[in-house]
Image 1 (tube, helix red, strand yellow):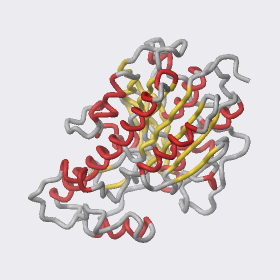
Image 2: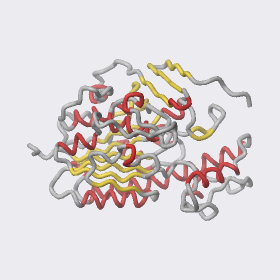
Image 3: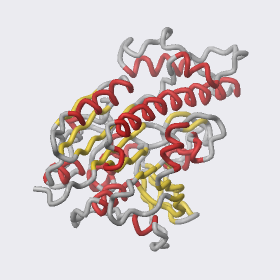
Image 4: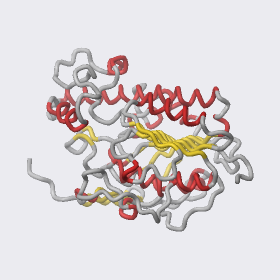
Length: 370
C-alpha cells in the first residue's frame, strides 16, 4: 500500500536519436520545438552517455541500472542464442509494480520485446511500429490506471533508418534541388512492405557514400523524422497537462544511442564513438516532488545506468544493492563533482569504450582495408 500518492513516471525513448540534432543540445534547425520546451523546465544533462550503440543492451541497461556485460541482454541475432534477462536482476517496472504502481509499456517492437525480458513487471505490454499509435496506446493505458500511480514506458523507432518521415515533415528540411537517388518517400518504400531488413537494404542501395549531396539528404530526412516525433511527444505532454496530470508526473526523455553520418567514415550505429554514445537525457521533475532539484543544464559525465537510481531516489524507494548506476540528484544540485566513468560496449564486434572526463579509450578490431 502507498502511504502518500507518489508521482507518476513517464519514460520516453526515441530510438537512434543523436543529442546534437535537438535544439536544446545546439542544433540550429527547428527539429525539436516541443522537446526544447520540455527541456527549458527540466534538468538537461549535457554529457549523457549510453552503455551500448545497440538497442537491446542499451535499453536493458536503462531498465536495470547495470552495464550490458552484467545483464547479458543482446540484440536479436547478434551472436548465437538470445537469453532473456536473468530473473535475479529486477527491472524498473518490477520495482515499481511491487510498490503498487500501474505499469504499462508500448514499444516499437524489434529488439524491445518480451522474449528478451522487456515485458517483465508491466501490467500492459504492447508494441507498434507507428509512433502516433505508440503514444495513443500509452495514453489509453494511463486512463486504465484506476486510482494507482502509473509508470509508462513509450518507445519508438521513428528516427531509425530508413529515414522516410511523412511528406510534410520530409519537406521541412530537404533541398528541392537535390537530384540524387536517396529514397525519401514512404510511397516508394512503404513501412509495411516486407521485413525491415529488406527495406533497410533497399534504402542503402541507393545511397552513394562518397557523395556530399547524399550525405546532406540523409541528414535532412533524419531531421524531418525528429520533427515528426517531436510533434507527437508535444501532443502527448499536452494531454498530460489537459488531464491535470502534469504536476504529478516525472517525465524522462532519452535515447538508447545516436547515429553516425560519416564522422568516422560510416553510417548507422556500428562503432563506440561519440556520435553514437552521446545521447539526450532530459528529466522533468514537477515542483511538488520532495527534494526536487531546480531545472538546470547539468555539466559533467553521466550515464544511462544512472536513470534507474535517480528515479528510485525521487520516489523515495530503496536501491537494489547490485545497481551500478548512481543517482543524478546530487550532480544536478552541484554537490557531486566526481567525474563518472562511462563504460560502453558492443561485444559482438569486440568494441569497448571507457570515458572519464575529457579522456576516452576506444578498443576495437583493426580497421579493414577498403
